[in-house]
Structures are given as structure tokens and as C-alpha cells.
Amino acid sequence: MPEKPGAWLMGTAKHRAIDLVRRRQTLERKEEEIGRAIERAHEGIDLDAAIEEEVGDDLLGLIFMACHPVLSKDARVALTLRVLGGLTTEEIARAFLVPVSTIAQRIVRAKRTLTEAHVRFELPGGQERVARLASVLEVIYLIFNEGYSATAGEDWVRPALCAEALRLGRVLAELVPSEPEVHGLVALMEIQASRLRARIGPSGEPVLLLDQDRARWDRLLIRRGLSALQRAESLGGVMGPYALQAAIAACHARAPAAADTDWSRIVALYDAVAQLVDSPVVELNRAVAVGMAFGPTAGLDLVDELVQEPSLQGYHLLWAVRGDLLRKLGRCEEARIEFERAASLTRNAVERKLLHKRASECAAEGMAG
Image 1 (cartoon, rainbow, N blue to C red):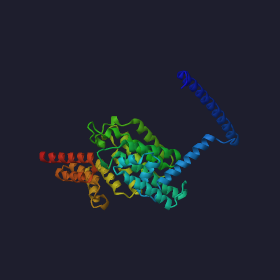
Image 2: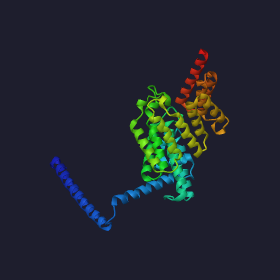
Image 3: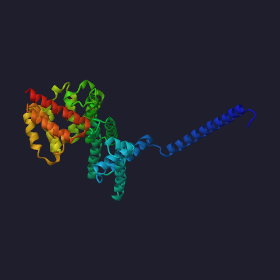
Image 4: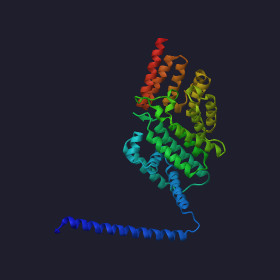
């Protein structure tokens, strides 16, 4: 034990501090020497640009690898969120309401599949790049949609997933600025994300589009979305499905009130989407727009053509849309049955409660009539 412990500690601390300062000065001097050597070796080269290009290529290669079509959609989503989103396995499992072990197995299987398929860490070219880009966009939008309208659980929306999908989309737009569909997807997500706050009522209840308080829409996100849409359009060529859907979202964003919505233009845009994408869901959305533009009878005629579509039998929104159109036509009992059927098919508790409420309203209207 020193005779004066306090003085000894102060002296030791002082010497330690001096050593640290000297070490830092030596390190800074060495860094300057290395920097000058690199500059001499790369005269005429923009180092910042070179570094950004290398990092960008690596990130883009990682995105294309994680979203490779050889993987299932579930595996692509899990791997993308884990590797690119930085989410833990537990966070991904919580977001999609599945066991942690399920997500862990998907990620492990995805990595094994990529290895066995000899998928290389690189940027594909030509037609392969076009095909892979479609897979990348699909995965990002799938993540966004799960956040925008959760398929199951107690939450109507999951803003964190929307934010993550938006981040990935913005990164992709920076990496491939000449691809119009990338900007189209970003535009679509920005505009839809602008409504997130308005989609939830004071008690946590869902608020449908036509009933939303548009003053609560995020104007910054709308401006960003419209700017991205303009960028997609300025790149020329035929507009793809994401850019067309962004144009539909823009029709809603530009309308000061629900009554001001240009439904005729929305119908025309859905016609264009349907020519590019053979999807019963697109046809259902088009039927909704037709019902708004030309009356519920016209919309119901189109929906009735979809009732026998096998892929829509378990799709709750088919029956919810049919119930809504029947209700507008005053066929309240039929509407009640459809709302009840839709409620039995959804796995989202909040949405189920809303559909039961609408069914009850139909029953009351029927009795009053």
C-alpha cells in the first residue's frame, strides 16, 4: 500500500492520460501518412465516389441475392428483413405472428437453398436482372402491405414494417436510379404511408379510406410520393404496375375530400394495371372503382363475376366489397350475410370486429326499412 494512496492514484492516472494522448497523436500521424500514400497511388481518382460505388454494388448484390426467385416468398421476406433490415429473428417472428423457430428455419433453409443453387453474390445482367428486380420489388411491397394492413393479430397496422419497406425502397431507388418501376414502388409506398395515422380512430378502431380525416394525412410523404411518381414517369416507357398503382394512390392524395376523387381516372388506371397483371384482386379493386364511378349496380355486376373465382373463395375482402355494394343498393339482409362471411374469413381481430359491426348496422337498417 503506498504511503499516500490518493497522490499515487492521481500520479498513475496522469501518466496513463499522457500515454493515451501520445498514442492518439501517433495514430493520427500514421493515418495522415497512410492517407497521403493512398492519394498518391490513386491520383485522378475520386475516392469518395469509388468507395460509394463499391458499397453500393455490395448492397445491391445482397438485395438481389436475398430476393432470389429460387426462394419462396416467405423465405425471401424473412431473409431480406434479417440481412438487409437488420431485424432480429424474434422481431421478424413478432411482426408476422409466427413462432421464432419458424422464422429461424426459413432463414436457415433460405441460406441452404442459395448455397445448393450456387447463387453467386453478384449483380445479374440482362433479362435475369429484370426478372430478379421484379422479385426484389415484390418482396419489398409484400413487407409494406403486411405493415399497412396486417393479415392477422390484434393490430390493424404495423408502422414499423411500413417504415422498413420504405427504407429498403428508398435505398434501392438510390442504387438503381434509372429503373422507373423502382421509383413507382417508392411513390406508391410513400403515398400509402401518408395515410397511416388516419387509418386508426381514437379507440384504435379501423377507419376506411372514404371516412378518413384527410387533414391527418402526412403532406410530406405525399409530396415525396408525387415527386417519385414524376421521376418514374420522366424516365419514359410504358408505366409498370407499381407506377400505375402509385398514380391511383395519387388520385386519392390530390382530392381535397372523398367526394372530389376522380373515380373515372382510377377506373382507367385499373384497366391499364389489369392489362399488365392477371390478378383477380386487381379485378376486385377495379370493381370497387367502377361502383364508385358508375354506381353500385355496375360494381356489383363485376364482383358477381368474381364470386366463382377459386383463388378468392377465402379472400375476405371479396365478400366485404360485395356486402358494401349490396348495402348501397338497400339489400341489407344480403349485405349482412356477406359481412358476416367476411368476418369469419379474416384473421385480423380488429378487422373482424369492424365487419361484425357493419353486419349489425345492416341488420338494424333492414329492420328499420
